[in-house]
Image (cartoon, rainbow, N blue to C red):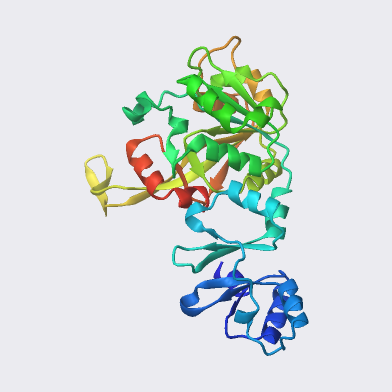
Amino acid sequence: MQNKINLLYIDETKTIVDAIKQLNKNGAKFLAVIGKKHKYLGSLTDADIRRYYLKGLTATTSVSKVCNKKSKFIYFKKLTDLKVKQIFKNRVIDALPILNKDKTIKDIILRKNYLNQRNKKIDFSCLLLAGGLGKRLLPLTSKTPKPLILFEDVPYLINLINKLIYYNVNTIYISVYYKKERIVKLIKKEFYQELKSKKIIFLIEKKPLGTAGCLKLLTREIKNLLIINSDIIFNFDLNILLKFHYKMKNFLTVACQQIETKIPFGVIKNNKFQIKKINEKPSFNYLINSGIYLTNSKITNFLNRGIQSLDMPDLINKLIHKNEKVGLFPLRENIIDFGTQENLEIAKKDFRKYFYG
């Protein structure tokens, strides 16, 4: 990250000649001018240089006199994909600096990279599982359904939907049961146009159907169906998951997270009554189900007739029994399930790490 940023900034004492060389080198049409204590002073572009040449400035003029000190930037604390999208939509700029609280640069988002990422069309739809009771988070969930728990003053479901829209999702299905009126009301307020165009569709459960039973409510054929528990905060690239799914030719792919479990005792390896070895406080690594899956609508063929409650682990075991190919996608990025009090505290403290990376 730092090497990438180094190519995009220039010290305030450098000259126009230095800036032109730097612009030719980075190919970004943008330089961030850095002052004392590495603080961001403003931006410098080809247009700025041409404009100041017309005013009679020489090639040895310092960039501090030429840079645009009113250029647009955003503080990292306020960074969301939606805000970045709005800035690039409303302003003709080639780059957007992301600043720390002390005005030092944390990152620089290049317009061309951002738009290329957004234009990578993934042909997929998504089912968000938002009907759970959230019993492990009582008493908080006695009034607030788990997907609407606030992270940085925004209900998590809103952030999750915005992330899917960023990836150009075809359709977002949201299964709801517990306190569904609150969820429906909020989504109608925040995503009215998406509901009107049926980009977002609710699947209303009349009784709890579990994490797999609600699949029966799907009425369309879907080539690629991403299924996500609505209490999972993740930051991995969905493009990579889709490519992996195709490459492996899986019927269903389960995103899996590796965890380490430490045993705080000496573990004995024995043969009947003879001790062979003692491992003092060993650690064991396991792959666990992250609550994110990729499949297609044909998975509903493996559900029993009628609308019945069923959870994804039971459905997965059924697929394996039927000799369908079920694969795992190993996650190396940060991911957390905020369905417990302990994890919720961690997720609130480090939300940006888990959601943005």
